[in-house]
Length: 88
Ligand SMILES: [Zn+2]
Image (tube, rainbow, N blue to C red; front, side, top):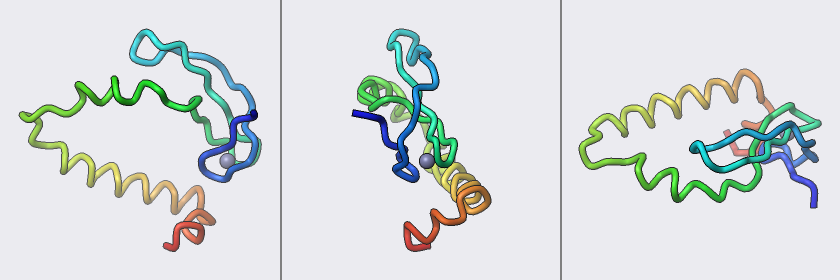
């Protein structure tokens, strides 16, 4: 089954492989439609996030807000049609 772009749902082509977390050999795919590069289904997220959030990390909410605003801006600039899709 071909990989579908998580942004525009067009078929994505194999782009390459690279290690994630230093041990998972992960495949990357590039969308034929919008050029978005994504990984295969991310099976390593539980492992990845198990150590990413610590009780002593007091800046996590601030960083989440900052990155959220940045992501929204990039989407507005580079993917203006995506706003219509998500009702913005
Ligand atoms: Zn796409």
